[in-house]
Amino acid sequence: MAQRFGIGMQIKRQIKNLFIDRQSPLPIKEWAFSIMPEGMERGRRRLFWLLKKWSSYTVWEHHANAFDVFVKAYEDAVANWPAGEAPPEFNLHFAYEAQELYAQGLALLKQGNRTVWRDWEDGYLSKAESASFRAMESITSKESNELFGGERGQPRYDDWTPRLEQLRLLKEQASLAGVSLVREPTAMKYYGNDKPPAFCGEYFSEMDAEIDSTDRTTGLLRFGYAPLNCPATPELSNITVKSGERLPCDGIWEPVFSNHPSGKTDALNYFLKGANAPWVRDPERRAMHKEFVLPMTWQLVWEDRRYLDCQVPDESEYLDSDFGQENQEDTHASRTQPSITRVEGNHSCPQAGFWYTPARQDSRRKYERGELMPDYPESSYGATIWYWDTDQTTQ
Image (cartoon, rainbow, N blue to C red; front, side, top):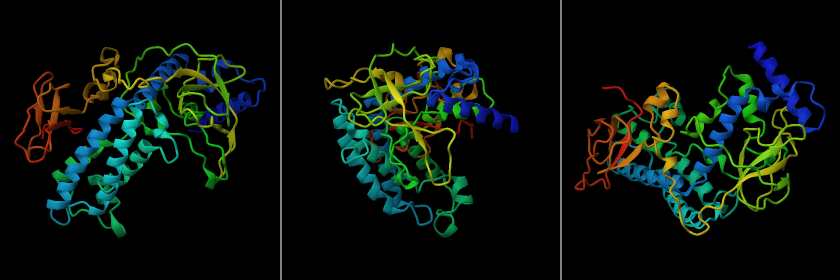
């Protein structure tokens, strides 16, 4: 542990030297963004793919639809489940607010208007994510209900029933894992800083220095599925902007260092047109309730011009579990967890395993890939939507 900590501190000092344009005392191969060149390139490609995914209309529409399914199930639970099992009715206020914000935000995004992720009055999708989080926060898990309790330290639910677990799975389908990748950076003014830091500055490099890993993509896992081997990123443009200057376009940007080649960093960020270019967190100066930042020059990697013609291109790769599967490593996660975890009735099963639908009780069963998923049009629940069960045991 001490050795790892020492390496991390050494790398942080090296980053600081680059920021203030001093000659690096360490060989360039040991610099944080190029410790493992092969892993760095893979991480750059995967993060670029994730930034395009989480800024896509298709993905946000998919999650808005999944949230509608959650809300319908939540309404049914509030109305019909007994006390001790029913979730609190108060959260429906946030649910209806989120549904309205989703509709407004998707309408604008479909026209190429990405102010929906700004931190101001038109940031409809950013606000929708926050409201949906509040709407779903009472649905925790069996472990959380037992260990952390609800109000006054007592478990919110008398018992974690199978119906509550199904509601939790619906929440999982509706949750947005990658919203922080596209949301406008904000300043931590209560930390004495009025300069917003970029989401990916030195963060990934610091994390990689602190863990034993030959794969720099470990930290990307929390943003959802991404193929291990993604296409190369495009050639850099000659457009640059400095911290505090107005960003001229939507797109993906990378930091510029005076003694490091362009296009060789995995610290990519999605920035929004009209916002001010952010700063980066100082990797060396830390203090309680205080945030320190450094100025940065940013270079445009890719300009996002999608939907300006009010047309949504084929973006199925962001929902397709088969994308890049031939290149996936043989891990338990890549074998069992598909990226398509929601399938409508009368459609083919995308991956063999256990699926369930709220449209029919006791619906959980195993389906083979390519098998037609049943539809129950007579169900009072509504549309038949099948969900991948994260518990793939046979019980």
